Length: 216
Image (cartoon, rainbow, N blue to C red):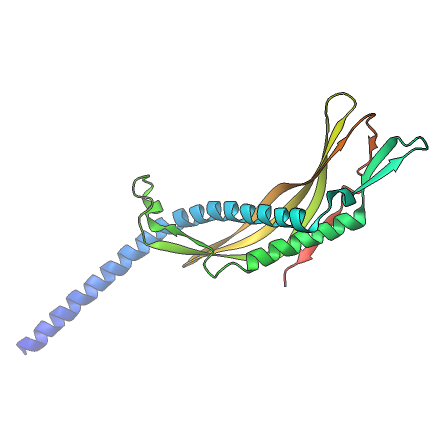
């Protein structure tokens, strides 16, 4: 009988300890999860932006001749009178960039990166303490990109035409027990064109080109 009472007491103590531990863990999760998610969202935005920049750089350096983007119109005397850009070529470039971004993100390992749990302490000296929390990233919906231009006077009778690709990506950020969706908007230089002499009219008539590439 005494052994039975002792076992009951041990079982009750163990149950109480378990309940207390679950309560503490639940409270800790309520406090830590929003902080970890906030940090993960910030890091994911930076991570995706760097991935986009790398993807565009790859396309520009390996697969693009910037001169092919522009349509130059001259008069009979050989003077440049207008500049526009080729919508067919631009669409091909936008599609190539979107596919490059998609491949780079989809080829990420299951754990894109990790953040230390110590970030919850909000202390610069303790923020790098473990354990490390894995963060997964997944594309949501379509990659939408567009082109925009900027024309700047450059010296006397010269103009610098800058062509940018504006990119919008929706990403699902996943941590253990919590997740969120973020929208990443970024603009990356695509090509530059220096026009010398009399500055021609710049139409940019196709600057509203819009391409949405579905995620497979």
